[in-house]
Structures are given as C-alpha cells and as structure tokens.
Length: 359
Image (cartoon, one colour):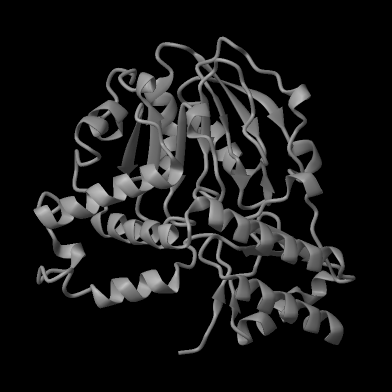
C-alpha cells in the first residue's frame, strides 16, 4: 500500500491504529458474531459501546456533571438552527461573532429564528484576524453569544475563551475539538461535527449545560429537541451507530496518547514547524495575523499562482493529498488535525522546500 498523508479539512484522516482495529472487528465485534454496523442499537453489545463513548468523552474533556452529552444527526450545520430553536427561551435576539465562512453560515441560519446582532466581524480584513475584544458590541439582553473558535477555511483560531459576562457562551468547535484543553464550564453549549478530529462524518456532539435544556420553542420536532434527546440518551431515533463506534475508538486512541494535554503539545509543535517553514520561505506565505493562526488549518499561498496546479499535481504524485485551498479563498491549505503524525508535517515541509528549490 502506498503511504500517503491526507491533509483534507474533513472528512479527514483517522489514526492508522483506529482503522486497523475497525478492520479487525469489521465482521465480528469481540466475539459477538456481528459487525457493529448490523447490531441492534438497543442490544447489550451496542449499549456497551455507547456507554464507553460517553464516559471517555466526559473524562477526556473533563465535562462537569451538570452538562449533558448528546450525539445527534444533521452535523454541526444542523445545530446552526437547532441551537436558537432550543435556547432562545422567549428572547428575540442573539449575538454572533463573525470570523469566517462557518460563522457566516451560523448567522444566516439563526436569522430565521431571531434578531441576530453581529457583535464583531473580521470581514473588513478578509477574515485574516480576530476582532479585538474591546471592539465587540455585546447586548446583555441577548439569549446567548455564539462564536467559532477555529475557522477551517480562513485559518484563524481563538487562543483563549472570550469572557462575555452572564450570557451563555455557545461555540462551534468542530475543527478543534479534542485538539487543546478547554474549560467546558465556561460555556453554555459547545458542539462539533465528528468528521475532523473525532472520527468519520455522520454525527454531531452537543455538550449542553443543564439549565439550557427544556426551553425549546413550541412545535420543534422531538428529534431536534435537546430535552427529548437527553431523556433518551440520544437514542430517540436510531443513532449513527457505526460512527459512534468509530468515534469511540478515536477517543480510546487519544487516551492512549496521553489525553488532550499530550496531543496539544504535539499539535503546537506541528503547527509551529509548518508556519516557520512558510514564514522563512520566498515562495509561500500565510495571510493570517500571527497571534490568530490556527493550529488545525494552515492556509498558504504561492507567490506565483501560476504554480498552483504544478504544486498540487506534484504533491499528489508524492503522496500529499487534499492540499488545495477552499474554493472561496483559493491557494493551499494543510489541515493537520490530531491524526496527522508529526512525520507528515516533516515530510510536507521537505517537499515544499524541494518544490521551491526547483521552481
């Protein structure tokens, strides 16, 4: 098998150990005679998988007891609508920080439910930095404040958790969940699609504080209602069971690496190496303000965009996949989530230096 490094922004690469374990258990999970994907989600076998999944996530993220963990379908994009539908609680406005494409999508969806106050926006500088906290216009009568800690497309990331007073803080952590330590108790809701740092596509995790449950708007379908799902342990309907299983394997792998604190150190080192190589280059550059650079998604552009096709073609030939930047911004992007080994970063840097030397 040809060795490749997959820099896709999502669905993204999974740890090799996880794929090998899933392969070994594909036809017969632990002597059950069944594949996980054909098990009853109400059976003892799958219930043990679900229990371990929830317990491992709570342990890894140090999730307090007064938070529910929900695994739902519809991805993070579904939560753009389900969050206001669940927690506006009669209020007619919510604050949003706009730092890029995913913030914009969340804002667009929320407008169907409430008055959206854009408290700050990085649009004027093409989302290459996070607006200074002193410039934020926060309405303390809003139902909550929403932000996107890491923007996969533009490559900006908050390096700390903003203080927004008594407003419930809501965060889409799809692209940096499990990559760095966070204090869950500072949030009302954090949510993420599973297809970047957690496993394959097919589910979203929603971690919601107890006091925000039970406030859903009248008429919201049960399947989207956090209280209804919490009461049924995310099994109001048949869950994305195989995705749950694979996410569980990723969590076990992460525990074996030493947990989030250990993987965060590796992620810091990987990102620092790649940014240093870009900054020292005469061919490549990164447009993001240094203080706001993402550890997970590293966009870069070539000084001569006529070389883009050659760069991508040569990269693919040498086993570096999915380096093309998002169509909305162009250029290149290396997504370096938890599963990307440090050897992949070293190899990419070596390739980039050789390409620069020959072009």
